[in-house]
Image (cartoon, rainbow, N blue to C red; front, side, top):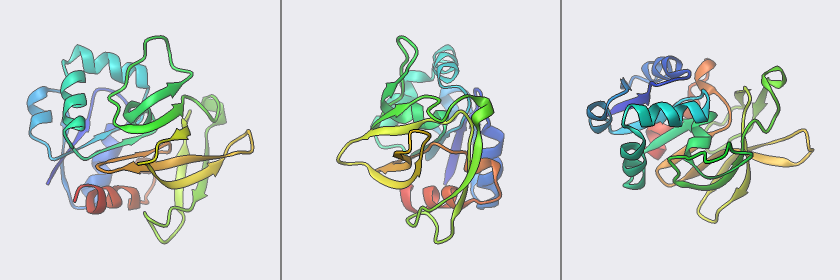
Length: 196
């Protein structure tokens, strides 16, 4: 299996490193030919509007959207979660996504960069041990469609519980950044469960 990591902006190198630890071959994706050669895709954290802008500049926006719609196993972390969501709260005017997961996410739901934090979260479907989750200007899920499985939740500043890891068929998304920790359980779950 060859896993592509969208390498236009954001922490794509960290995802490639995590995939290497999982023993999987990966490659950076910046061109349509690279996208066409991969069996799965990771959309890294970064800035969602910048990812949209650059993917359009590189002619990748529609090809990625189409491959996702046709069943390409795809995992998005943080901004990647926003890019896989069908709906966004607090979106910039005209903001688009690749879509595919029937969720509504709120951008920067936990606050600004200074409000970033780490927490151990429980996600039994992913790991029997708590997962160290790093939230950096992270989104959270506000609405969930019937076909979406919630894998992990956390309490927000509003004292309500919000989903921060979800799966819908061949698509996986987390509001946090597992790629910048030494815990590769999310990547293993993606490779062993979502990609199969």
